[in-house]
Length: 395
Image 1 (tube, helix red, strand yellow):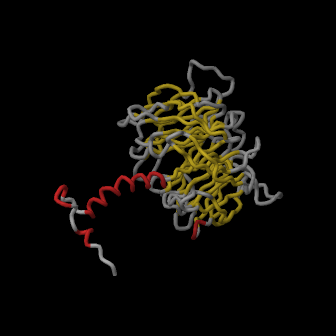
Image 2 (cartoon, rainbow, N blue to C red):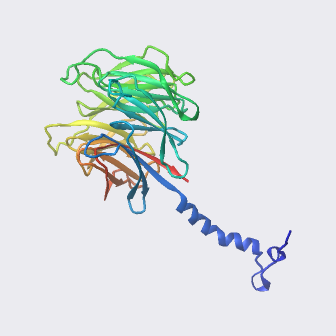
Image 3 (cartoon, one colour):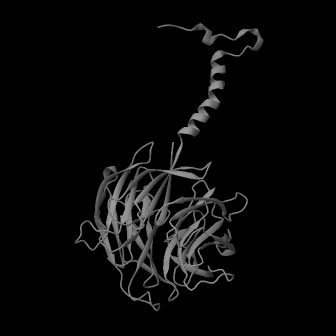
């Protein structure tokens, strides 16, 4: 084997730096640059299959220019409106409103493998969602259970995540019963299932019967184990989506029909909810004959809460009191489009993406470090009937 004695020598008496050390110093900035170039940010966009939408859009996003390019579109079934990323970042689950065949009145749950290094999707399997019109899908923190909510069916189901990311047939299925006082509440309308931070519970929001429900989760079986604890909300409010504070024992429910946010204390021992207050979402300076709250998320640091409204087409921005969990309205930010459905708070805490369904765009905002009120970048991504945004960082 050849040897290179100069590698252990020094470069003359003028500098006395070992060549090996010099090479390391010279390589360091190059390595960082190379890493920055190879790091990729992927956005997954769920849509309705209208206006020539091509289903799930897989985008590579460049945050230096706020631009994106389409890597892939996936349209295995109609209306992949909601998506859920596995905690490992290796799999994506989609709730399609179309059934497995033309005679199937239920929806379909599809499992996709995410290609390492590219973010592209490949179908692993699909199963019946077990209910009509699935509108929300989520994964528990362990990555062992998938939860699906059905708006038209007024029911919910759970699925076991199998080896290699495949999803089982439905393990649990629960049909809700009842109604409430609003014209849109003649029957149950399940809207979302949000797992607790420890994965022991899942919180179900049923818009049709004005209830938040807490189910116990068996992560080994992928099942719901108990009759739920039921937490009634104000009649006619219509709970839609739900978010848990990442550190504090508080949770927040966006109420679609009353355009309000419910503020809850969370019992650290059993996960029970206690209503603390409710706060209005609408701006008194704006008027719209139609208003319907949609989505709700916290900032990464937990200091700010955002809720989207369809009608006024804005985000209500609240500061979170870190001692009480209560909210202080800071203002309203126009979403840069029409009919904002879901939105995504950037995992780095720097950006916010809003899916405006009726204006066919995903609008990009920055979140300043010193305050949590989103600021428009003037940039958007054209996506027909955009409904949902998910984000994945790949090195």
